Image (tube, rainbow, N blue to C red):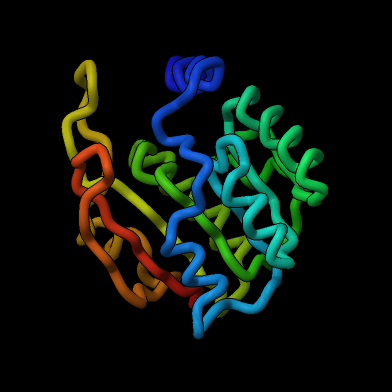
Length: 195
């Protein structure tokens, strides 16, 4: 798949999304006054593991998944250097059923993965989340708003109304915080709960 090759090649350089900084929204969810107690977390599209490592340092048992094999190799090296344990898989987030991971998970984190999937892929991704997240589990989703896909071929990103319609009846939207990415693109954080 061309998309997998392109993303894989980015990790031989420095992809703009790999900042090495855990977003303040995630820090607030874990360390804030209403912080989530440690449990099992699934980091989807984990890249080089920045957020997986952050969660592991805060007592979470973490599984990170990304289809860029080089990113996963870097993530494993970073985990070893940091002295934390994270199970990293070079795999497709739309085929979580093929991984040797068992439910239940208490938290799913997706920072910029779901919005890049096609409609069919989103369905497969959601099937995996339905199976892996326990009732009451949280899903933190960061996504760009819709825009034309570079090089043609439809759009990338997702509108808030589409997020809400895709997730019913399995997820309850708790809140949405819109804004823009440092790149200037419209983006939003979605806080969801598995029903």
